Length: 400
Image 1 (cartoon, one colour):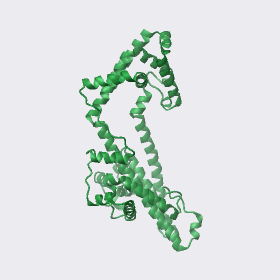
Image 2 (cartoon, helix red, strand yellow; image 1 turned 120 degrees about the vertical axis):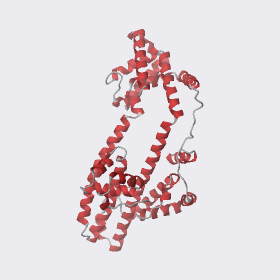
Image 3 (spheres, helix red, strand yellow; image 1 turned 135 degrees about the horizontal axis):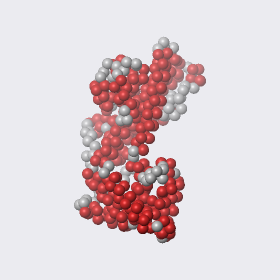
Image 4 (tube, helix red, strand yellow; image 1 turned 135 degrees about the vertical axis):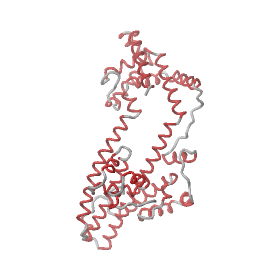
């Protein structure tokens, strides 16, 4: 698993050398998260690194793990009268404060990602919304325009991936077709052919042993079975640990302190094991997040996918030019709802009102009643003006 960090090491390691250590090891990231929360001498570059967009979700998960580790340590110290309790509880409070900060930053990250997403831009652009509704109104004509544009660009049939039941089936397909390069070794092959009980035992041993980790469980082809094993182990341990759920330790019930010593120690051991299981589940999430992000980036960079998207955008613009008055009608129906020229509010994009407007527009286009509105507003001027607007918007979009 490479170099294992200690808390006392973190303040002395340059950020550039720290980066590969926390990239390769989630355990090291947890250690750095604890050190950053509790040590005032951590380099500022390291603090800034953890708060960067690409690290925020990992940092949040690491802090959640750290809270679990410190909580079960404090519970054991409290029960045994360990003099280190005050220091551990102080450290736990500092880590919880950082967890709250990370949660706020993670929410901001998700909000920014959504605001910059294709879906958000399509939902708040009156031009793209009108194009989408026009395609819905003339599906056969649009399909023919796409076919011709693909032929003009010499694009073959679109490669179709099968429908996947879950992300792990998608990962298996990606490994088989070279989209993910993940060499297998005898340990991986042994677990791939093992039954569920053997995988569960491997996952349990990996959670108990903080020093010798089973790297085979982290192979892309084993992530699904690892997650299933961790879920089953969590469900099995939750009752023994007197936890609220397999996903949250909660606080120890009052009656815990009246238990016989051997039973109380058994509960503490079960809680430590459950905290380790919860940490491994967050580690699994991190690996899954990294793989799915890689697949998304490679899909976006696929030349055929890019060319096909451009062909569809051109066909959509051609459909507008074939039906300028219908396009003008849709824009006229959207205009009263725009925040400012050409932009719809996000509240409309995610509300039932949008669906109602769309139903009204498509019904009018289907039964011909849309012509009354266009006639009332002056069809030639409205159509010509909005078509020029659409061409300008289309060129601006294509230049992005």
